Image 1 (cartoon, protein in one colour):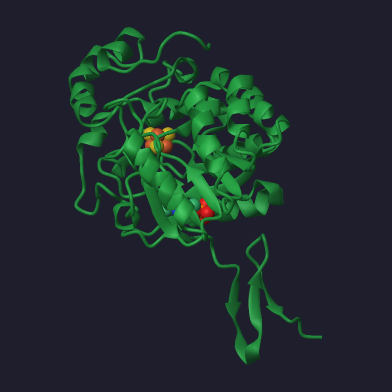
Image 2 (image 1 turned 90 degrees about the vertical axis):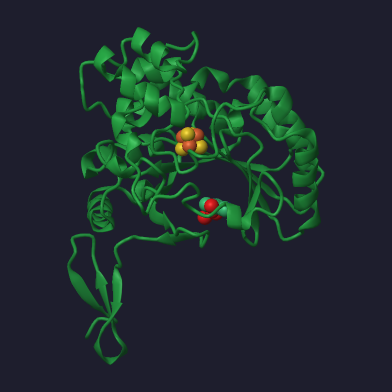
Length: 350
Ligand SMILES: *Cc1c(COP(=O)(O)O)cnc(C)c1O
Ligand code: SF4
């Protein structure tokens, strides 16, 4: 299933039997607006017989993307408002996003940065922009953590990754380097010894956040790629988006969370879908999301519980959306809900 080349045009997708002739004209329109890429590993996962396949829904362009709603925006989570130099987003005091690359191995149809990612140019910051980004990090001692995202940082060659890591190594106040990536799922074969050695050049504590949304993405090959990272001493967390028609079902979402934990990946964030243009077919109601998350809490190990979060439009950061388990009650007491939804007074009345 690995090897071969990625599908990047509507004609490639049609030739691979992933879209029918009837859809081709609309898919061309979508592809003219938003980047398209499907790796061999992802193409192999798509069930061509299922018109509602959750993998296809995440990666194959659809006519629904041509519909843009008034509340949707090009910069849905307000990156621009917090960009002091190109490639850096500094929204929280102790950590920055470092978008060294704007290319991804696959382009998710619901991507929150879909207006910023894509295959233009060589995909990375220019040398002078790189210098400015590192200078910014070096000049701000409150930056404890650098989060490489993009784009997908693990799409870079090991040589370029090693170079970035060596430049971070000399910035004393940076203690943690985190990567947000889909590569272990989209191109598991590229998580090899050379790439891992490149990451370790930083000498920093490394965390990798894996983006996956459906349990079928955690194939034996993807799990093996993650095992190589974890065995090398790299901690892993997960990041998923709650998506209509993909994982908006407690059984599917629970299976996904269990697949992460089985792979030694601690579920971290479950994002409510952002207001990216042409993505309304993926969005559900927050109340529905809360019901799905509450159903996980009732059924699964504490290890399997992600935090359900929303990135507040305008650059205000993430806010927890989890159903409130605790409320003030009479006489200075609290009402606390258990995993079945039953309320209890705290402290208990003797
Ligand atoms: C999401 C995000 C982070 C990371 O937030 P955590 O809660 O630490 O995972 C950092 N900076 C920006 C700008 C973000 O959007
Ligand atoms: S991997 Fe991330 S940045 Fe790239 S298209 Fe998917 S959601 Fe967007």
